[in-house]
Amino acid sequence: MAYAEVNGVDLYYDDIGSGVAVVMLHGLGASHEDWESQRTPFSRAFRVIAPDLRGFGASGRVGEYTIAQFADDVWALLEQLKVKRFHLIGHSMGGAVALQMAIDRPERIRRLVLADTLPSFETNTLGKRMLFAYRYAMMGVFGPQRLTKAVARKLFPGSDREQVRLRERAVRRGNVNDRTVYLETIRNLLGWKISDQLQLLTMPSLVIAAEYDYFPVSDAEAFAAALPNAALKVFAGAHHAVPLEIPQAFNTVVIDFLQLRGTAVRKKASALRRPALKSKRKIA
Image 1 (cartoon, one colour):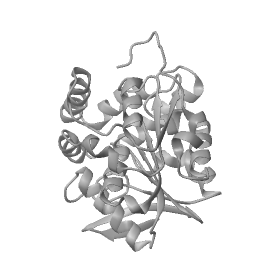
Image 2 (image 1 turned 90 degrees about the vertical axis):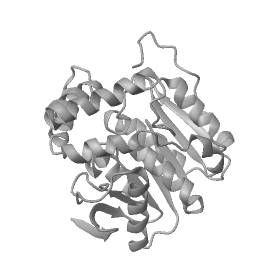
Image 3 (image 1 turned 180 degrees about the vertical axis):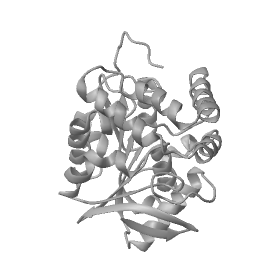
């Protein structure tokens, strides 16, 4: 196990492979373990660095749990590891941390991958208000066990063996979350946004969305369109945990993107684009 003391906290991180670094940031209530299906495939071509954000996984539970603090911690870790320029991948809340890092020091980011995330966590729609209120209430009243079971059913709703396995694993991992850390993180997430600064992110970027995510595909389309140099990939039939639910498809798309030559993503990665899905199912 590898730890680094940064900004007053012991930060756990996974570090495997060699070459250009790829930093992977997990979502709310998760840890570096959520990248288990990316660890080996990516390490064949890259140096994979996957930290547990402050308060989650095996990292210390101390200090503030804000997007800005998470970003500062990762920057401090990379300084210790002497990583200068790197690819950056963020999932869900980890996507917000990745966006904050890209805004803070854009010259350090080679390529940016943003999966199942948006550039604003403002509760400006009824759906977003209900999502945050539900999670906050469930964790506050019933604790991580009940919340994790409910979230796992949303992430992996199928009845086949693989969906059941993923659901059980999500429950087992989520049960170790700290109630206080989780609640404080949600409170600090509300109102965070960099949607008015997206024009500053000129590095090649890839927005990954799922048909049945917590937000409609149209939000991801608008997000990708607002980035100066971005491609969009929508996975039909997938839910909020794309890297876990369909790892082989996710890995293929992302590795291909990271290995593209040149910097004009809209032109060179146009094959990754696809029209909006017209689903009969309601996207919550």
